[in-house]
Image 1: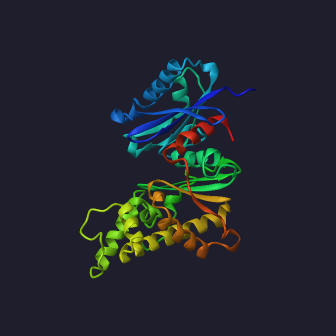
Image 2: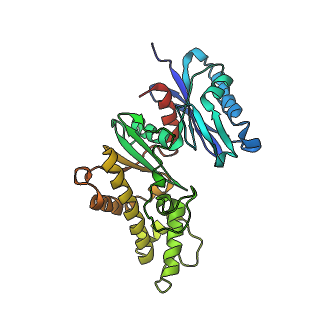
Image 3: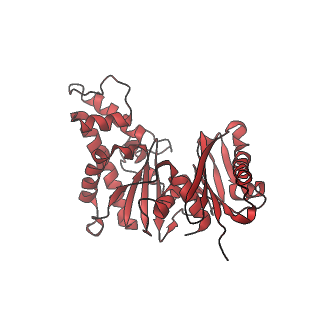
Amino acid sequence: MTMKEYAFGIDLGGTTAKVGLFTTAGELLEKWEVPTDTSHSGEYILANLAAAVRGKMEEKSLSAQQVEGVGVGVPGPVLDSRIVPIVCANLGGWGNRNVAEDLSALLDGLPVLVGNDANVAALGEIWMGAARGCRNAVMVTLGTGVGGGVIVNGKVIDGVHGAGGEIGHITVNPHETAVCGCGKRGCLEQYSSATGVVRCMNKLLEEDPDTPCVLRGTDFAAKDVFDAARSGDVLAAREVDQMTATLGMALANIAAVVDPEMFLVGGGVARAGAVLFDPLVAHYRDTAFRSCRDIPIKAASLGNDAGIYGAVRLIVGA
């Protein structure tokens, strides 16, 4: 059966949904954003997404016979590429529904498939991004939290409960007393996310009041920590070393299970560049199983578009 010419990719976030019109060969033709209406427990989210797709089809004079379908990345676990089984906290309590079925009904039966946003971003990178040509890759997204996606033989490993690839909630410190957003303690997200870097940097500043630091007394972000480390600030450099040691150990543990062709690092923190990647690679090599030691660790290349690329890949198949 011949594939149709066009497909839509949607990356649903708590503030906006990114929408892309693609050819099924993977060319991004147009992208735009629509606000995510989280009022009334997100009751209008799917109707708004359907309206965005319909509006573009009308504008471009596309019929349903020309559209392969719609892929959607959502910020939560997904079962069977269709069902969001729990309520998504940052979508106003939206969730616990068959998203594929409901959105398809709003689009007069157009096929819809759904994936976790971090998994879908990984799928985008392996299809058209930094891992293009790979069949096996692991992506870690370092933003407000730590997301992840594991691709094996071109397929997302999403697991029985939709929790496959939840790299941010690997336990890296069983002695941690602070509680992660997930309710556990000692998760990777508490150390290697943007918020984790700020938290740990503040802790270092408190524990070492006599060491000068350009960040002391300022309202700093994770980017400022990396900038200070790059400029030679001793305490900031210590935090970056600890953060990359923790992340490197986590990647080494993942490698011992998955043995991917490549690790990809995306999200806002990844924009730090060499000050992040150089120590990360060194720490990874120190802790990795010998056979996995030379797996490259690269920056993801699609940026904020990874999610819409991966959403389309759900529809056009691996």
